[in-house]
Length: 166
Image (cartoon, rainbow, N blue to C red; front, side, top):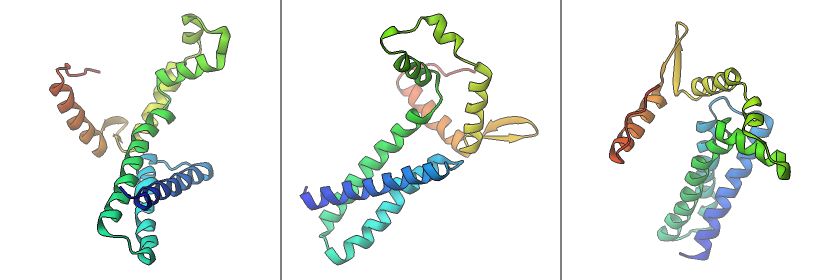
């Protein structure tokens, strides 16, 4: 891989990442998964194509640059939901980090959770990102929810895990 392709891919990703940070600071989108892909993959790819016109890279260099951008953008897109989610695991790790050297007991950790609030936030995120849809006061799998069920259901069967039950 040429250093120019590597630098182009990294530079395009960093430009998209900065766009992502600025966008979220101004106003976090309701459908942040779509906006994340747009900001760290699609817009940098388009801007990179325009920036490449005067440089006229070879096709292999261009493809390598897009490969670097794609790898970084997809890795970040996969990592981001875990970093921003209010999952119990993430909240516990944050609590432990804030406690520092004094640590926390299991009782202290449990006391800090409001199960109702945690569940409401998760439901709101599912609806905002179209993993679930609400009709007549009931929730159903949305378009992304159906795709996730198919993909993860197949993966769970492949690795020998039982079907998850709610």
